[in-house]
Length: 216
Image (cartoon, rainbow, N blue to C red; front, top):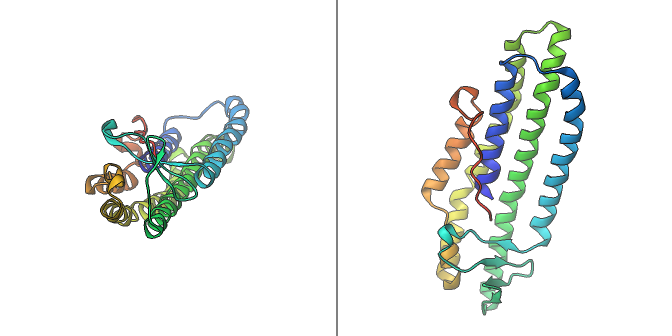
């Protein structure tokens, strides 16, 4: 999940900024599609936010080296669908990790929502520029200013990954069955930071790169 939201947001920012400097979109097309797209994106993100709180949290399992792992809203750790015996202290730690992961996921959803809105806004802003006499460069600067706030939010999220990594490692020590799912590495942290800083730059290739999906 963590990579999905960051890289998707970066790609949307890149598309928005690139669109402003590559000519004007068709006004009829933009007007006909932006509202339905906006509604659809918000519906998907709202559903994702609800699922984070109410459904089992699927644990990252790189290379499918372990059975499917999940954490339920009640704090059960399920491995291949079977609950792992937990003490009261272990259950509390599992629940704390779940809440930590959900908090990061919710921030990712908020960033994704802002990035999607910026991407959709690019078309309408460019159309407005035609009637206001603004240059493509002026439009691009306006959108870049808004994109800066999204990048800052993405960086804030990425800065939480070291704490997530530490929580995973501690949980893997205290609950050995969790060890295969403690998959966050320093490389993940660095990659997240790099995506947040450079992913929204239209000249960096973000506009043409596809999001890398990691389910969680």
